[in-house]
Length: 281
Ligand code: NAP
Image 1 (cartoon, protein in one colour):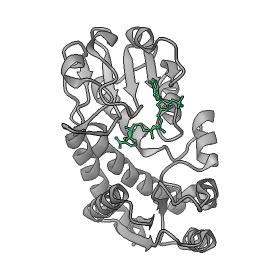
Image 2 (cartoon, helix red, strand yellow):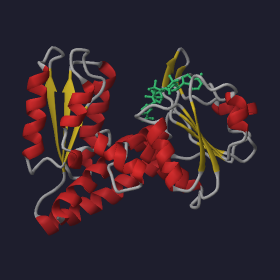
Image 3 (cartoon, rainbow, N blue to C red):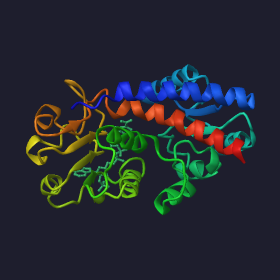
Image 4 (cartoon, rainbow, N blue to C red):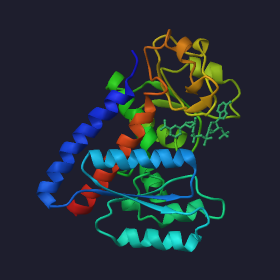
């Protein structure tokens, strides 16, 4: 089974469009997403453009604030504080990476955690690892929704997460634990990654190395979720060797068209959740 992330993301956005319309008729207001883009990193510009496009498509308010790369940190933090107080802004996202002179941690911690649609604020990270309600980082949330498409009950499954970044690997581990999986988290110092993978019912690859996971690393019938987006001479490829692994896996996400489209859909979902929490108080 090829897990169709494009289709699943479109379905998710369709559901959100209906939800936004309902919220509009109930509260006479719609969720608002504000994205701050600092500098002109080409990849970031594309991501932000897509975020804006899809936010508008589901009927949300969407605003992009653009600053030059040499913006003073203080000015950026002041803007975030202003947005924290603005009722029209349900969610705030500062597009990463930031220029070196800006302290990423300070920026993340300045965003009100109830408007932190990326789920990076320490309050949300802590809530997620304590099993409490929180904003969940968009890519791991997308992975877990795709996993659920294949198997509703993940309880007792052995999952391996390759990569331990704050963005992907760590929150993914928490989500799998929440589903009662037994989780092995691996990284660049892991001794025998192939042997670890071969024991797993679920493999989540979030590494950034093209086609790292080979066909003979995967147990027959495993579910494989490929987070990687790697530019190569032959185009964009994932962290999994799709041609080899799709022959042994029960289900696999393609790259592109797997996890990627889910990330923005989950960002919109998080924005709706922030709006709901602010209005249900
Ligand atoms: P990252 O911050 O660079 O983290 C990579 C992780 O992989 C680190 O924990 C690193 O270990 C580990 N690693 C490196 N080499 C390894 C090896 N040989 N064996 C096992 N683990 C190894 O990357 P990231 O931000 O999580 O992104 C990972 C990939 O996902 C990238 O290709 C990125 O482009 C992609 N991505 C996709 C989406 C999407 O929407 N689909 C979103 C975000 C990122 P150490 O901790 O020991 O260094």
